[in-house]
Image 1 (cartoon, rainbow, N blue to C red):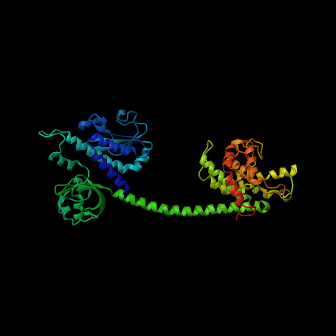
Image 2 (image 1 turned 60 degrees about the vertical axis):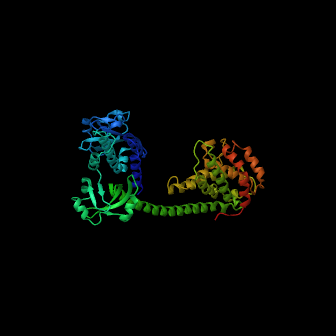
Image 3 (image 1 turned 180 degrees about the vertical axis):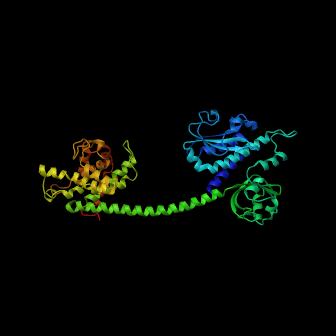
Length: 509
């Protein structure tokens, strides 16, 4: 019922205004608050008397008004509407037009709306426009009646004559009900809309209103109220159909005067929307479960591939786990500080944690006599060792293409290929420099070197944490990205904690 309540609140705000101009301002402000709307105006025929609002509401000649459509339409700029209505050319952008007629059936005016997408606006708000056009017509008619002098009375008084005319001119169902529940009066619109021949047939029905509360409670609710009080209820038609209505009613002496707005379509639409939302919730839950399974599958795939490299080089068992944690620490801080011209996404840290496992996957292609050699490598052996970056990229890129472009292996393939590039261009395999090196690889470079320095190898002893931190600081803007180096230095104690917590034994399972 949210849309119904919103219209009811709008009508209440409109009715609280002291003059027509303020009422129309509230109405157009509500329209302008809709998505995609840039402007809204009310235009009236020059034959309609508007009293004090005469100079404030844009006018159009009655002859021109007669040329306009009699239903909601999208104007293309060739209509007879004057350009001064909006203060610029009506044709840009397209104007949505919702007309309303006067008491004698002639065109009295229209609601005009400028929207970025007129078709989309009409599709979403056609029902709203019809209700608001009807409300605008009532405001204009009432002002016109008040503006007609009645000898011996103030022009602002609602005379009995005016009240009688008001009941007839309102193009919504109106009823007058006695305290005993008998219909004393209904207008023609009531009879026509709810399929009753006359007042007599209406009163023969045992229950026209299907109320949530009993009649006594209904009277108690209205007692002491001096304004229209909205009530959502149902009404039984002469053809035994049930319609949902919004009932604006108030006490007039001992009788009840009410105006009805048929909201059956709104109620049904809200019910369908509720059903759709419930269905969407179920779909979202299924999607979430499927996504969780996919993420678990991706993680398992990553870990299984990483095991290949770990199996080949057993002395670096904890290396992969630590690298992932180092890279995630840096990525989280990059997201917080945003030191680059581009934005580091919130989920980047989780993605790089998983992808970092595969940075050395290419080592599965390095011969054992080189990979496990106890001592420095010869120049030709070193050239072979360096090829692990390209072998890793080829392996992951081929799998990436099998899964589809930009799969979960895309980030991993970039890290595998470029984590030995240097910020000054002196690295391998392609000699990339600065921001031409993928961010993931720049992060991986710092993490990989820190862990290599602080780990024992067949050809060297492990450095202390402080020695490794000093060395990486010296290579700022040479081997390593300055921003990432600075973050590393600010996080050094967290790096030390990870290094102590994850020893050199296989932990990835």
